[in-house]
Each structure stands twice: as structure tokens, then as C-alpha cells.
Image (cartoon, rainbow, N blue to C red; front, side, top):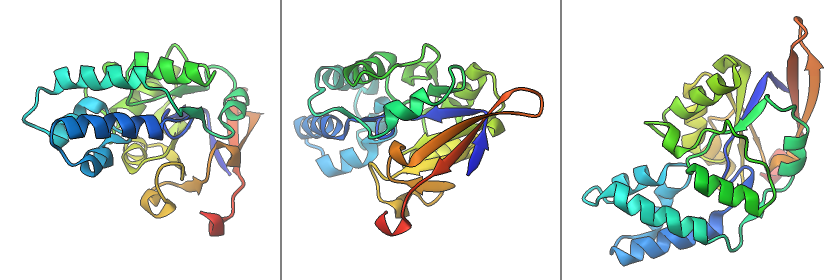
Length: 224
């Protein structure tokens, strides 16, 4: 069991499975520019697209290419689906005690969440709201601040090593899902589970009458 006051969810790989669309877009972009698609995709998950471009093709005009990639991602939603248990998990947490912290822009996040009928909070932290994306802690620190909780009172749910590093650097506990990467690549997390279906929340009253969230986990390590 882990306890917290608020949960900060990554989006892709945590609430929404967009891997097929993400990889189609990035592989197509890489091929157009004569880049190794596997290398590009390796850096695409869990990071802002502008930072991915700067890493894999530093000679390019990253802001311009970023706009092109983002537009393709917004238009390509084929195969995007909700992560198992995500809707139920969100519904079990009181409003104001969770939000989304994503490397996607607001427009892209809204497109994906809307496509699978999940709500995107108005206080979500998206790519255009930060100067430094994951693995820098800035996105998660801003998420905690928007909800009004100290970082140590927040818990992060992630699917990438970069996201886990961001949450831990922000002083938060981290739960990892093996939806995108195998468990051994997520070993810095406090708990590793398969999907949102393995996470259950109980809402309790704290010592001062405030709400506390107790998270319980169901999974078999042998299956991960």
C-alpha cells in the first residue's frame, strides 16, 4: 500500500495506449529525413516531441518540425485505445486530487483523451506549460502546485524511465506500468504493475479532516 493526497497521471501508456499511432508517426518522420526509425522511436516515448527532435536531429529546426509531428499525431488516432482499468481508476479518485502531467500538447492530449472518452482536467500540465520536459522534475512540480499539494504528498503513475525519473526528482513516489517497457527498465519505481486495472484506491480522512488516498496493488511478479 502507498498513501498520498493526490495522483499525477502520465497520459500515453498510462491512461491511453497510443503506441501504434506514435510509432507510425515517428517512423514515417524518420524515414522522410533519412534517420534510423528505431533510434528515433527509442527517444520518442515519454518526452516532449521538440526534445526528441533536438536529440535525434540537432541540425534541424526543432520548433518547425515539432509542429509537423504534432499535427500528424493529432490526425492519426487509428488504434488508440483506453488502458485497461483507467476509467475506473480515475472515477475512484475525488476531483481535485488527480490530474494529468503529459509530454503532449494540450491539443494532442485532448484529442487522445476525447477519442477514448476520458476526461482531461482543465489544470492538466501539458508540453507548452513547461520549459523543461521529463526527465526534468518541472512538469510534476507544476502539477503538484496546480492541485495545491506539496510534492511529497503526490504520487506519480508512469510508464517510462524518463517519467519515473521526473517524478522521483520531484520528491514523489512512483508507480510504473509495464504497458510500454518491461519491468526491469522501470526498476526505479516504488511499485511496478501491469496496468491501471491492478491499482485500487480507498479514500480516507486524514488527521486534520483532509482526504487521503490509499493505493493497493494486485499483480503477480512472476507475470511481469
